[in-house]
Length: 108
Image (cartoon, rainbow, N blue to C red; front, side, top):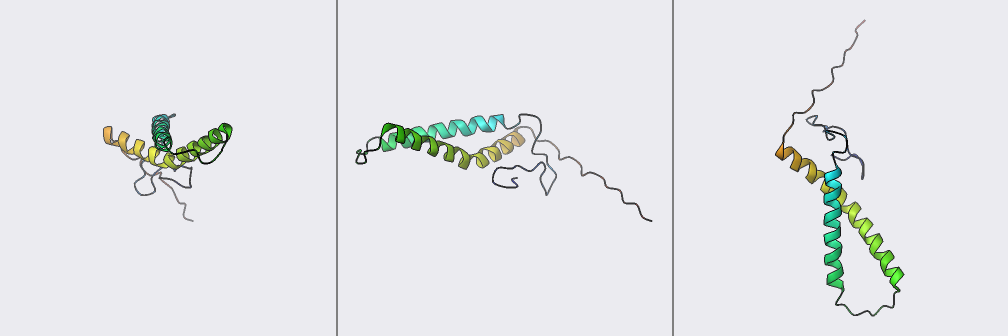
């Protein structure tokens, strides 16, 4: 489904299924990714809250570290949320792959 780390193919190379059905198709996947990231951040924060503060890190540094962690977590979950969104949508409402484009060859 993915060409690189962040690039999605337009069609499946095996069956020709279009990965972009319409404009804004993956907005639901982005919201799902955001929700899972927020829930995991809250869980990690609550798990780390009872630990004693042996390091004397300033509040600004802690916030910066949490922001970096949130961005990396969101990027790590992006591929999974997009794949899940596509599979969930296809499960609810399957669609047919687009027929392959016809190519004509001219023989001389």
